[in-house]
Image 1 (cartoon, helix red, strand yellow):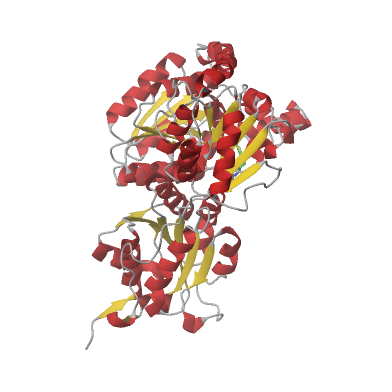
Image 2 (cartoon, rainbow, N blue to C red; image 1 turned 180 degrees about the vertical axis):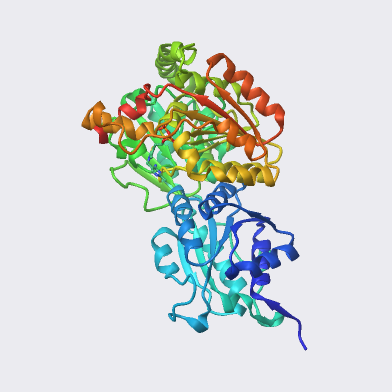
Length: 554
Ligand SMILES: Cc1ncc(C[n+]2csc(CCOP(=O)(O)OP(=O)(O)O)c2C)c(N)n1
């Protein structure tokens, strides 16, 4: 009799072929055979307290490692709980696979436990969503789902595997089992050579260029190419999303606070790997006389929401390298020195204006002081994660990651609750790194129970809560729109001592009310070697300028 294999073991073999070494999950009877397969293949199983966390962790794992992340959840409520994580990965262009259980095919539409139309639900927020129809096809369809994750800009895929399909055994020689490295090709695209020549010409003529290095610079692992580009052609660089940290703070080409000025004054604006969405004012805040060039992995993103002078579709690294090669570097350094100096002056003025707030000794603590202390505390090896509203808006202005790939935020879905999951994935994938996550108290309370998972799996990280006992970003809008006396509806939180919560769950915790204690408390958390929460009581009456400028409140 020929050797047989079950569906769950086929899933594990396909994951292994893809290089996935961990799955994030919350158990259910529909999916246990996958766990058993993971045991055989040496794939770690990290079980969390909420499926949203499992899906966010798979997203975070993909961002950190460059490999697709994988979450496995049970049918029905397990899959619906994971929807937010998949949606976040979809908007953030993060390649991950969610596998959901499903009732047995033999009981299709009979009202089995936890039966729901998962594929219909997932189709609009994935690049690929399908039911696996037979045990023999399981590993093949898993490999197909991974391939789909990398079509154009990356994104998530979803598969549901009915219980009888997953649990059945089939002869090993009847199933296609993909071999590592042999079932999908590189999708890196070089970009149209004519367009590359054209950009080189535009750069040659430009006196005041600037470049925005967006998340795809990290997705494409284009850091070196981007650095060579900006240094070789003397172009001031701004960074957003996962592109932050491409250049280290202090680098002569690293700019941040003068972005609006640069976008208004530049004669050439190159946007790399970030869409003209709300974060970019839909592209409307760029100088009307500047030449605008957009480089993106996704053809559909180029020229969306505003016209451009040149679009190039493809891999950020390959394109920036080719443009540099095609450029005749002559007197660009001398030519653009005045422009670089002009931007540096604007940058320094903004920084100096804000510095007194960053050094403020006031009590309750000014949120600017908190994010300043965090910025001072970060090392080249600290991965920084932001999860919250107003407090994270403050941090976006002040915290600068010191290395590429060391910044994680939810991305354009703006999902609260990603922080614990991203910390979990980052620490699990990179044990050599320090992980620091800044939470709003509102954001923390969405997924905070998974602090216990961090303890259980010995994943030390430094959690900082900017605690204002409110959902302040929303409260600001209510006050602005309806007046102070109606501003407290639906956004008030209890005064929770999260430092005690951390200790209760087996971690390290502290309460901080004195600004001078923030730095020492962070250092003690680092030294504890445990998952930690430093609960910092910040002034609830102070709002970030970014929050106050949001047009939806006006
Ligand atoms: C899952 C989710 N629910 C609701 C929101 C809307 N929202 C945006 S900011 C915010 C307040 C967050 O409060 P907190 O984390 O305490 O940060 P704070 O604004 O107080 O600094 C809310 C509820 C969201 N972005 N995501």
